[in-house]
Length: 214
Length: 245
Image (cartoon, rainbow over all chains, first blue to last red; front, top):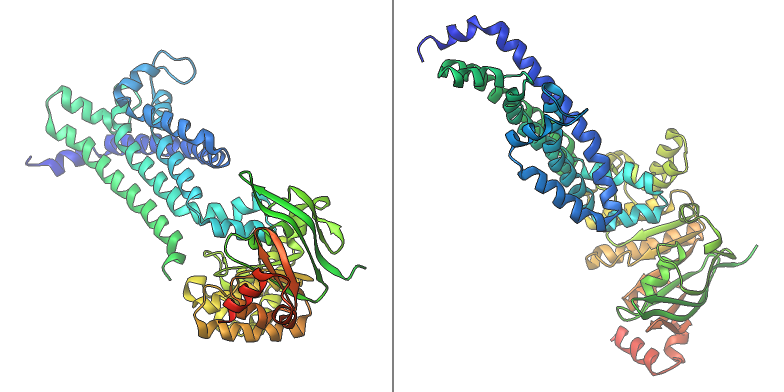
């Protein structure tokens, strides 16, 4: 382990580039998962009968080992193949469940008396959603996004196996050459990235819920 | 212009095969306060919610200012009716002033008008705006929250106010204070008020007339004196005796 900082420093340009790729994978996939999961979660609260099967299906998908899912996606047209696009598809699939589930749970856990007050005062469904339900569900929704993003940081490392780039490249190379320093050069920034993402979204969550604990 | 604010005409409401309201008939005049009272499950809250269409009648008609509520857009109707619920039902993520100005906001009033109206109403319900406008509902006592709930209901100056157990969750001191102020507001504003309560003393104190309800029907509607002196049947007599015991 001696001389690791120097070893790391020598490879700083490559590590920085791969970290950049990693961040892009996580950001793009989390953003897409929010774009799909949030409206879908809202739709489920309007059709409670669908909620159970849809959430169950999303949970089942979650149990597929990520490496296998990457493999399954390779032969698919449009979404699959080799490279970052396939990785993003898989990461979106994994990020979807926490966002979907928390959106649903967040909105359905809003106090029914508050919802009825909103309706009774004359809010339309859209106004009720925008002014009352979503703001009150936001801390729970954000907690889901946070889980999704942190999980994506770890999963994106595996995506190097299908040529998606990112910090996993260093880890796989380290495994192949039995070089712990190389593995660490990938794993350490990935762990730091996970901590940063967790901290940043956690801060947002706390800031948003400040009205709860004046 | 009709002098009837709210009219129930042989209204029926069925829940899961059971009639919550069955031939419910009652009229509330303009500027009049009528209390709906009866044992729990008698249908009093159901009747109230038919007025602002949180529930829909299965038979008969409910009219507000002479118009059948079913002929009106539910959202527009609700914005013209004040609505006070137990424990205020305030929006926890909004300030007190934002809560009070909720209906004006929905009606698209300019921000400055909303703010002025909220300050005016907060002052009226005994919460100096300088001290309370920016607070969150969590930072208020139960009685203060209920005052905000009343201010919110009055914000768009509705001719009719619906109150569902408005003071039910308060301690006796806060309740008495709010009841006293309610009579003051009523005198100043001259609104028609439909009030649901389970407390006969409160009904006698606040209402011009009291409708005693049992199993979805109005047994008798009248002033305190009428109910005490000439109860329509044994149920009303027992209810009044027990309520004042």
